[in-house]
Length: 274
Image (cartoon, rainbow, N blue to C red; front, side, top):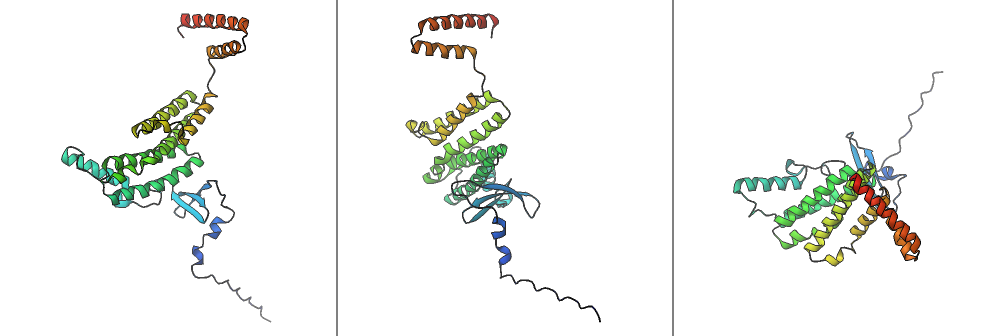
């Protein structure tokens, strides 16, 4: 009796469009309210992609270039395109006076800046600080371009409210790289420079009193404290701290000894030229 050939199993029918369902991609990656969940994956084109988990799905971005992968006017982004337009105008006219960006062009730049914001936030979470520096510096250029050449007052000013935040993120990323390399003094200088730039922003808009209340300033000051803990303590500073505490508790005998020791060390430092 000839061997019976098994009948092929029937494949379950897939509903029209089922191959586009992103549920399998999200399986095992739950959304966490209040948390920024990001990851890197390899795309179908073999290149790395960034994914940010959202409550109703995910946001996928290119790691470099424009986050959505488009190349408007054959350039990396609208920013590069309009910067080239500005350079060409200046070459032709000898100055930038008269160059302007329309409301529509400024809107294109703003919409694009939001994409880069999502990406540098994701990159910061993943610790890719060099790329964060790149994208934050790029968004600061957008603010400068619109701030100087937007044809409308609203277009010139609307992005400025975000400048302290972008400056803070740029500073944190730069200082984080230096901190990682144990260049603590340099990292502290970077944070100090960042705070100065934010202070200049508030002064420019006549809001000096808002500086200390700024969340961006608080974040950088907290980072500065963390960096200082890594710096070697100067022996003279340590002795001065002990002296202050002795005076405060009215231990004048101990205070006198500490003053003498401070004087001796200062003299030794002066003679050594340190």
